Amino acid sequence: MRPFLLFILLLAVAVLSSLVITGNRSAESPSAETVQQFIDRHWQTPVALQGRVPESYSELESSLLPESCGSCHTQQYRDWQTSIHSKAMGPGVYGQTLVMRESDPATARVCWSCHAPLSEQQPVLLQKMQNGEEKWVINSAFNPRLQQHGMTCAACHVRKHQRVGPTRRSAPDVTGKIDEGLPHGGFIA
Ligand code: HEC
Ligand code: HEC
Ligand code: HEC
Image (cartoon, rainbow, N blue to C red; front, top):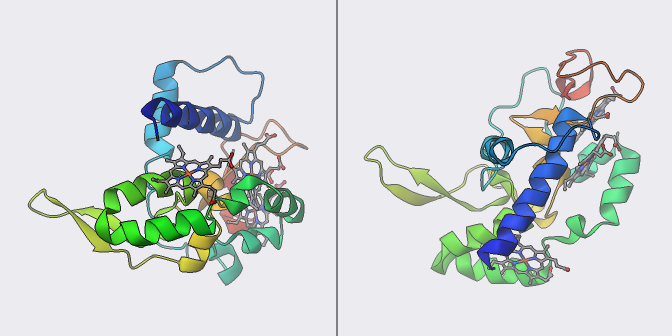
């Protein structure tokens, strides 16, 4: 993968995702610095582990699987299923990274950064040890079923188990509000 291509792709993801965050399509283009800060905050590779599920969540709400999201967001699930994102973890990538995760996990991680970007989708993680060294460790949060789903809803919409998405259409003045009364503890606009 050429670095330039990677850069363009990350930029596209960042611009798209900033739409999710602001919910404002007419906003002026963000500066390069703002885009970079956004990527650093939300698009670590891999996306940081979601961590502990909030106690108020039901089993359905705590699931990162697209079909779980789809049990409520039926239209978005249908759209996603017809998109190339749902097929991002095809047999080709899967087979190649299966070998690489042993022989060259650093390169496998580069592949996963586009093909299965959540930490929960990656069997091994690079962990910083107490002495400052980095070491590949078995990921106890790895979910093979989630990995098979490739570019999942959660990769774009879930950080620390909090949903991130555009503002409600019926009340566009609601921004950045977390409504505890809604499923999955509301969402961040
Ligand atoms: C139990 C049903 C349910 C499940 C499961 C669920 N959601 Fe939601 N979600 C809702 C409801 C209800 C809202 C609020 C819609 C509103 O206020 O207009 C919402 C809001 C959202 C929003 C805010 C954008 C919007 O305008 O609707 C996003 C993004 C979102 N959910 C993503 C997800 C993702 C990703 C998953 C799976 C990881 C998921 N949801 C699982 C019911 C659910
Ligand atoms: C910058 C993002 C990115 C990175 C990094 C990346 N890919 Fe891809 N890859 C894609 C996209 C996007 C497609 C789909 C292209 C299309 O179909 O037009 C793709 C398609 C593929 C395909 C063909 C489709 C399939 O499912 O069989 C294979 C195989 C593949 N990539 C393997 C890899 C491997 C192995 C690596 C790591 C060495 C890698 N990719 C790294 C974005 C990426
Ligand atoms: C590649 C990133 C990406 C993936 C994967 C993705 N979404 Fe989205 N989603 C977006 C963006 C960007 C928007 C905002 C679109 C807009 O404002 O028109 C959005 C909008 C939404 C909304 C708000 C209502 C709407 O339709 O505009 C919901 C709900 C939602 N997505 C749920 C899901 C669910 C459920 C999945 C998986 C089945 C999913 N998304 C997969 C990026 C993504």
